[in-house]
Length: 195
Image (tube, rainbow, N blue to C red; front, side, top):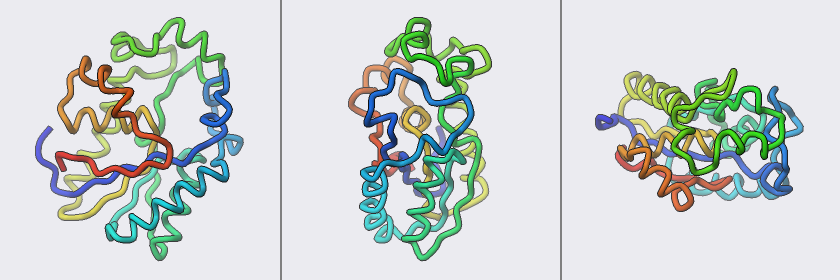
C-alpha cells in the first residue's frame, strides 16, 4: 500500500456482553441495542479519551453499529465535542446466514485459523478479503480527501485486524500467524504504522 498522507489511529469499540459472557451465539443479524457496551466497556473508552485529547485528533470516523456509536459518543463528548462521521464501510465482518446463529455451526464450515476464510464467503455474507477490501477502500478514499490530519477510526476486531495487516503488507499466512498477538482488544487504541 502506498504511503498515506494522514496519521491514522484505530480504536476498537468497548467491551460488550458478547466478550464478557462468551456467548455461544454470533452477533444478531440486525444491529441491536442489546449489543451495548458494558460498564467496563464504557470505562475502557473513557480511559482512552485521555490519550486522544493529547493526540489532538482532527477527524473521527466510526462504524454505524450501536456498540461503535456508543464508543464514538463517549469519544466525541470528551474531545470538546467533535463531529463523528458514521460509515457503513467500517462495520464488522458480515457473516451472512450465520449471524444470530450458533458459533459452532459457523466454525464447522469456517474454522477459526483457516486460510479458507480469506476467500470462502458465507451465504449473504463476506470473506475476510471482501471485508479487507471494504475497509481499505474507505481508508484510501479518506486519504485522498484529506492531508496532514490526525484521523481516528472506530471499528471492530476483524475489520481493524485486516486493515492493519494490509497497511503492513502482511500476507494471508502472516496475518493468520500474527492474529493472536496482533488482534486489537476491545477499547484498545493503536496508531496505524506505515502512516
